[in-house]
Length: 239
Image (cartoon, rainbow, N blue to C red; front, side, top):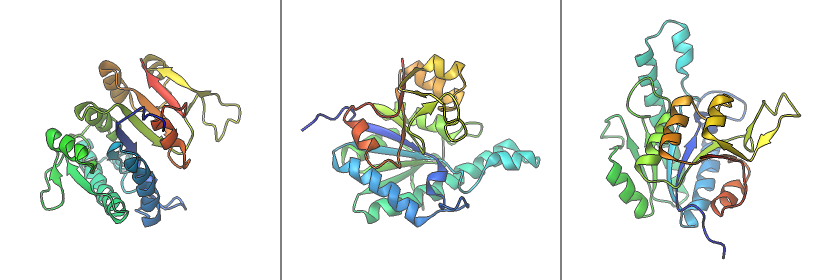
């Protein structure tokens, strides 16, 4: 039996991962079930899984800013939207038979536990999936930055950025068939090339704390499992 390369992971999902396949807005229960199946597979391997999810399927703050909305207000709306996604994902994972807890950086005790670092770690140690919603709890920070921060706080072995492409390219592979995929990147290369692995704040935070980032295609049924066993999958961003 091969040895697991990572024992505790922070999985960063975009809000679009829960969106309908036709490109519309909202939460598609079928998409939630697919994500739950992927998470359930690695959970059954004995991997401790924490999740941070975005809100792009429900709210895009940039659209509000273009209409003159206050930045802090737009960001708080986005944080609330991440909680809706977190609850939808929790429901799908629990229906798959896996105990799950949602913690929120924004206090809403009737809906979710407040985010407490030591409690989140304890849930992981007890074999529960932990979904961390509400971003960092502060405006002006993205869910990428929230994922980087939480990965460090819970002592994750790796931050896995789930996408719909099989890694990081030097151009959009959908419009540039000759785009080159990177197997490995340094943090500085990713920042200097502006490759949009994660935003600059999140990348810098990972670089300062030597948190590796693995970018892979979660919709490839075997990609996440193979990555956890140390196979070369996607793009690894590190020191």
